[in-house]
Image 1 (tube, one colour):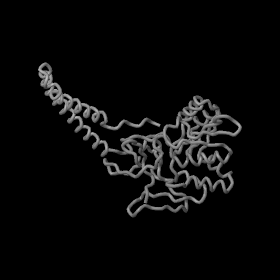
Image 2: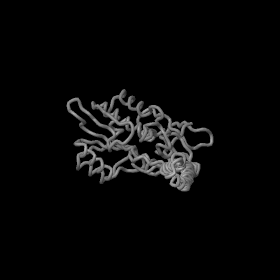
Image 3: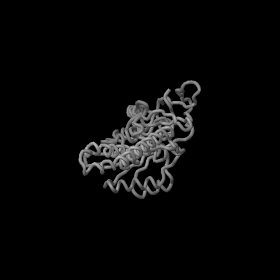
Image 4: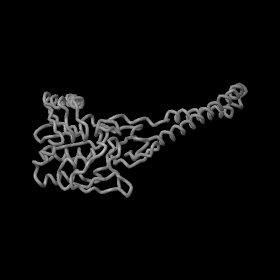
Length: 309
């Protein structure tokens, strides 16, 4: 997680208000000290710097307004904040999602109104790689959480905010404290590299946890897979996850599918606020992108794959 960006023009607003306040105080000085023969000359001398301070403050406030208008108009996935908890890549990057996601043979799609070529995925009736392509990152984490819970672990996740490099903490009835940690990467079109796995090992070491699992909808580079084996990290790619799900009972598979397609499963979640992002339009080029409902306090954005009908 990256720190939330400071609101554009906020220093100008603070300084402008401060200058106007100081100017107002100086203007009031003649009223307070004007009756004193000794202090009256000093009070009269404060009138000029008082007006200078007020005019400077008004100029700063006007500049703040212009900066805020410009920032709002130019908001886009390429220019605004990032939400890299689920992907670790910049919003708008081709590594986050492929340009086009082909439907599985025979898969129906619920289309947007006439004139739009941006489909929203329909629910699958069984488990396949298409399910991972349909759902957003938070749904993938929820599937992994339920998958480990079915194996007998007590799985705990953090819905939003800085996660410290751990998405799921696993607990056992026979041990005190977490027995393992899980990192989830909902990636498509990009392999998990040794850099990401090495960072996960650093988190495990810092947390004092010896067992860890790295789960992704994508695949691993050979170097990342070798590094994981050498350091005792269990890795599962998209194929491995589907194989593990296939070994579950029919009832358990249906439970996992229900978790995957819960709610607005295609609409991404804000990693900072834990709320669903909304469809916004860039003032720069008219393109659509996902933005947080808490803008401008939160500037998390993601590129659009699917939009609401």
